[in-house]
Length: 123
Image (cartoon, rainbow, N blue to C red; front, side, top):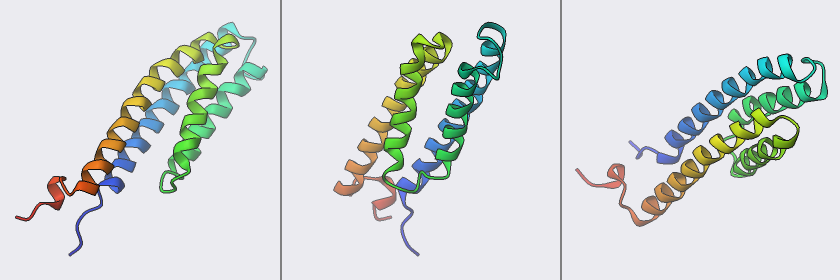
């Protein structure tokens, strides 16, 4: 039996964070509908595009380059602050969440390289 891959489990955590973020950002569509000129406006399309990007990225987490896609989506949300302030605030909040997740990912990779993970210990 092979040892479990900690990064595979961590991808599940990241996918869960992306889905939660997609749900929360999709709820921002209600705010855009009321304050931003409707869902067919460019603001509604911006929010919808980010939601779609978050959902699609869940399936791409197995690739190393997907972390750059996640980072680009977070930067897009932060950058949209001037167009849709609500989305910018969500970008700030989820940016902090992703900063923590990237820090955890780096810590798990470091411990895995050093052989200090509990799954790497002999029983």
